[in-house]
Length: 349
Image 1 (cartoon, rainbow, N blue to C red):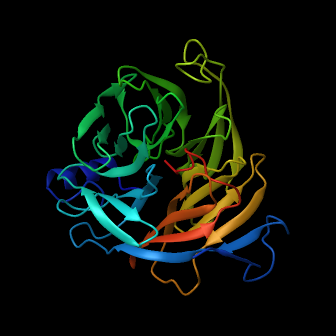
Image 2: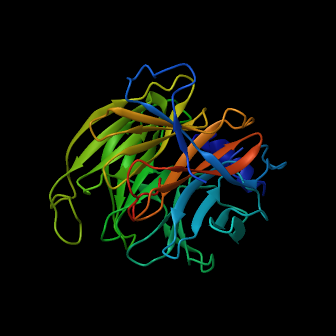
């Protein structure tokens, strides 16, 4: 998620405002095939519903973190919601209804994920460098992790869980300074140990396991690139990590030609396809595991006042996908048919 500098977020939060100022149809592109190749398709997403309007207190609304609950409802966050407005929402996508499940006067939540270990909803509080958890209905808030990791406080953005319930967090340190101090951090499921898996990243944003849980896809917002972090072989309690929590390798996997848009969150389907969200354009870019561009998912041209499609969740076992789209016109949920089926982890952070 593209965000304001942390110092501005904290100032707003302290002031009691906030810490952060049908199916798709496939068509040809509006001016012929994309420059990425003749195989690239344009998928037109369809509006499901409007969820928010621009908040007077913060001057914007920004939906993020869509994640499916086992009962089929979709949970998501509004990063810029002020105190008293829904910061976490639960959406019945079939009935097109939504209700608030959590608000507070402090957090600026940039993502949401359900843990396979304890079933709770985990949220990243970017402004305060914390990860908190809630009961599925929104009660029982707990601080899961706070403090420094290797001498520096995190700016946690997105979360991916491994099968055992350990957290993998994109730490977007360095964004406000324009420095490449971002990190990928692993936190044990009990919150007792945090390990830096990679550093020197450019405003780490999206993070998601590949379809086989052998590595992590990580988007770097200020360089418009996606890196692949291959993980070592591990035991039952730490799948695909080495005995010392090590990683095997890291390389730049995809360079995103975003123009004015920047790479945001990432989701991965059962076939290993990547769905890369964009800040600065209401669209998603779809790549296969080898970096070939497969499709662009766009909202209809008539949808004005929208400037980001930050995130997406794909229905587990199905291909119905839901993306969070925001801008001056408000915060919306759009749907399209994904290229592959969703899995338990096919939520974009």
